[in-house]
Amino acid sequence: MGEGHTQESTVLAADDFLGPYRVVRTGLRPLGMNAGDFDLAVHPTDGKAYYYFERVHSKLICADLTDDYTDVTGHYSTHFPHPHPPYVREAPAHFTRDGLHYLITSGTSGYFPNRSEVAVARTYHGPWTVLGDPHPGDVFGTSHRSQISQVFKHSHKKDLYIALADRWLPQLTREVSRRIQDGLIRRHSGEAQPASEAAFPPELLDPDTSIADYVWLPLRFDGEMVFVDWRDEWRMEDFD
Image 1 (cartoon, helix red, strand yellow):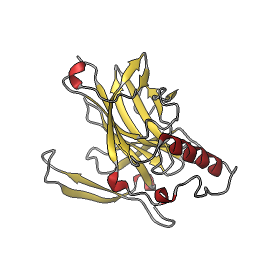
Image 2: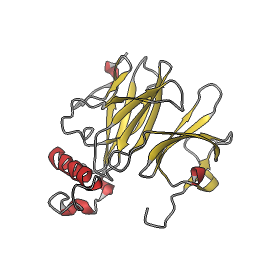
Image 3: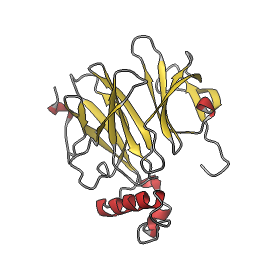
């Protein structure tokens, strides 16, 4: 999104999951804001829907959707305020388990991976308690070089939740990714000038995201805490 540009969403509807879809709303700017990465959550009983989105480079917002899911009602709450990237939270992934609401979010560092954060609440609007990084096994702090975009429960397993994560830059090594992340922190905190080519390899200044792939990993729970451990391979048959 360039300076002076707006960020808008389009709402489509269909009678079947596979379509065909028809456009029912264009130009949606929730609360008049530019909305970054988002997730939608629908209450399983009353059908009420909630729109989680990043108010660009500011904070995360939870807004109630109208009954027809094409707009926001005006009721909203704000969460996780931070002064600047890469600490600002984006890419919210909402799910519920045992009566608790969870949000896994990413920091803001463009296509470069960073440290994820998990938070828990009793309601859709919080208040949220930050529990920390769900990837303790990743000493480089890059969420296994990926960005979680969705978490869903396997409908035929007792307690299997699966995280789907984008690996925007599969060629990026963990060492280079960590160096870039440190450079972004220094730049946005005013400790350094814009990153040089030494910090940002030339081939990554204009990345080719058409080669992006995905990471699928099961969640592990310890009390309220969520962990997403790295597994070279795993099978759904290994879960009850």
